[in-house]
Length: 201
Image 1 (cartoon, rainbow, N blue to C red):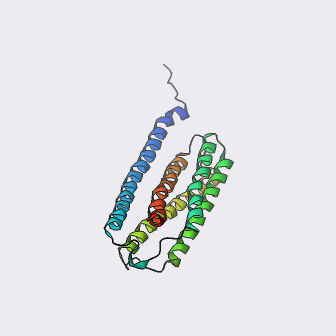
Image 2: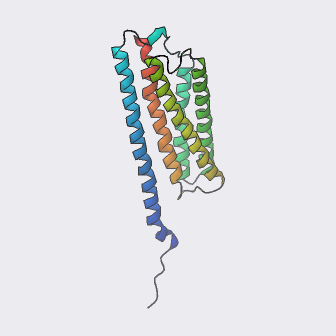
Image 3: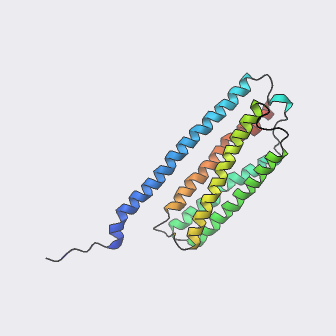
């Protein structure tokens, strides 16, 4: 009786599927945890605001929107080339993957540069009062997530340039995309809360 030979791609499929599921759900759980942290911080921000006689405290001017608004759209817009890159690699288009990831990376770098300039232009520190503390904490934490996302992008781009990503093997692209979109969604809540709402008083 002859032995039955199982094709290599079929034999590897279950392990690849488990690897994909573990990575994706691992990132999803991390995002859920991080989202909870941001929700608690934003709730703290609005609690401090509701109990304060003036906001911002200490005669601090409300955040400027001249650069904050356009660079916020730069960050939100960076999700589009990531979506485009993800769709490309699913079709085996590595060139499209490279172009999309690099475009999003440049947009992310531009947002980081703006954020650092914003911190440098502030006339108060994180220890001056409750407003300064919560502002630096929330915006700084989000900036940290953006920087981590950029580091992840570098890893994924290196994999793309070294030929390690294909139509069949691109779980790192999907995991990175999930994280990057999360970072953009968080700013959809942070920006209106900390930058826009003080102007509506």
